[in-house]
Image: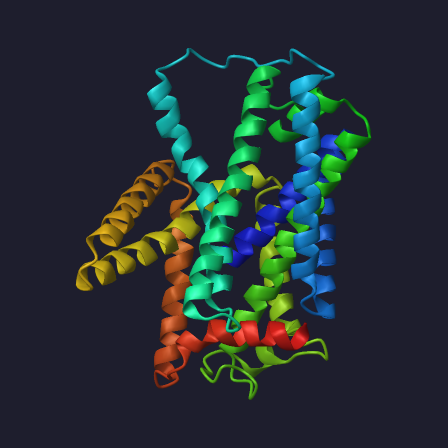
Length: 359
């Protein structure tokens, strides 16, 4: 569920970035979304080079964001934008509490580097620990600077609710730099970075299906059809990619190609996993008599629980819980029918082994 929503939201947001630069494309939102979805899925045929692409797109986005911030704070094109008031102003504390569940989405990005570093077999435990601390600190610093900088720039330039067929971040960049090359590069970098994120999930999701398949080269779990493990010479499980393409296309059309329609569903699906992980880590910390770690994990679990409750109160995200539960129940039933095979915990490592072989 997480991979499908990541793919769909990333592609839909990339389309929004393109439409913000070229509003005439707005009537083609769904068509563009399906085309980009098929394009990203098709590129996975050539293997796992998406990691390098993702790194390059990330650097390009950071560089273009710094350029937007520099221009916006020193010599903006539009010094006073349009920030309409849509209702009576309330206490700032209430605004912070209501925005907290959305802001918690920033936490979802920490799991990727943490998981990747934990699987670096080239480093010993102490080296991995130091590398992890440095990487997560740098990640936090970059995200904090860009997020606070863009939010501060929006306030300084009075950029509020986005224009029709635009996004707030696009409006901030437009007010700072105008409709020139910097704005074009910023929007292009945003779209390409989002497509690279979709590509990453198009590799990880099908890789998981392959690892759980009955294919001889899978992880040995054998609870899904053998065909899902069939690969080309670039180690791409093409039938599994097709499964994710079709499901993502259905979700994209159902959401009318708008990422904002999917964000709450995504947040609930991700934070359910977060809550389970934090609860398990709190239990382990208490069992190992490490009160400091236990306190951190319990505090995190409380924050995630608050986020879930606020999002679930809006009603529709309950579908995410239902879908997650249905997928889990189906996989459990298939696992039980297969005789409860061991090796489930090795499925993730099997995906990474495939990445190294393809690289």
